[in-house]
Image (cartoon, rainbow, N blue to C red; front, side):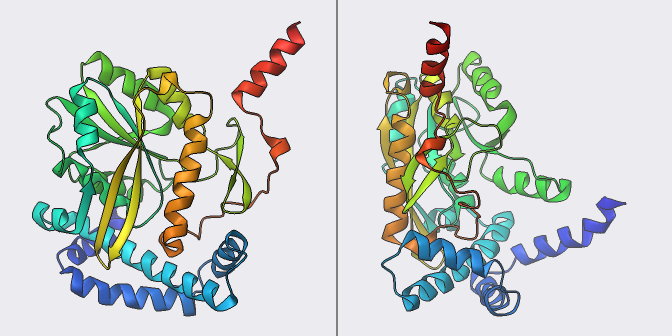
Amino acid sequence: MKEWIYMPVKWLLHALAYLPLGVLYVLADIIYFLLYYVVRYRRKVVFNNIRESFPDMTDDEVRSTAKQFYKNFADYFVETIKLHHISDAEMMRRMEFVDVDIIDRLWDEGRSIVCYFSHCGNWEWGTSITLHTRHRPPVDCEFAQVYRPLRNKFFDRYFLDLRSRFGSLSFPKSSVLRDLIRLRKDGKVSITGFMSDQKPSHGDVTHVVEFLNHPTAVITGTEQLARRLGMAAVYWDMEKISRGYYRVTTRLMTEDASATEPYQLTDQYARMLEMTIRRNPAIWLWSHKRWKIPVTFADDNSYDKISSARRGNNS
């Protein structure tokens, strides 16, 4: 019964995907107006997040940034729908990847990669990286992204289908370590994208950094996995060049995460992401309740601190 309920939604989304992006952006303008002026979707959250992150901004600057964020968010919505029926040539024209040779070189050396990404620009278009590298899946490499399964099974399958459009895999967060070990046993190098800018899940180890004028609990699992498997790490620096055009620059963080100090990569990611956001504040996902539960540096219970405490208790 639930499948039948969502069938009209599926048909509508597929029908919309056949429309040119120029037409879809008219729809995006309507969505922006409804979100910002009518529904007022999380406006309080967005305004508070921007104001607290940029205390030097005037009220007019905060309002302007918020409006541009909602416009970008509406663009993200229609651009993501378009993934169903966009040609490889058009995607390559609209999504530019800079310094992809870093990825190719690391793969030539037999090293798999974790890719720190974020909710900036249109992150769903990042899966088109498969069109730009010398290596092609699934012959000698794999492209993948980590995701948290959605409660709604229809939309969970819908997004998994979109994310596989250019040949990449999707690994549930709960099994990503096993999946990467399996790829290694199969003799395949890989690059796996981690959206590490949201708040940690309940029960995760907490590492606190200064981020956008807030003490912020950050995700540490990406670094822990990279260090354990001795993977390289890169950061994808996203820019929105103009409407419907993006640029992602690959920035090398380390060629061997196992040789880094604890939380070196996590701290480095926080600094690099902040630079991306400060360059164009409206590009980030401000509607996320990132600081819903405030933390202080006293709340930091990083692995190294836990290990030190355990050693102290055992002595």
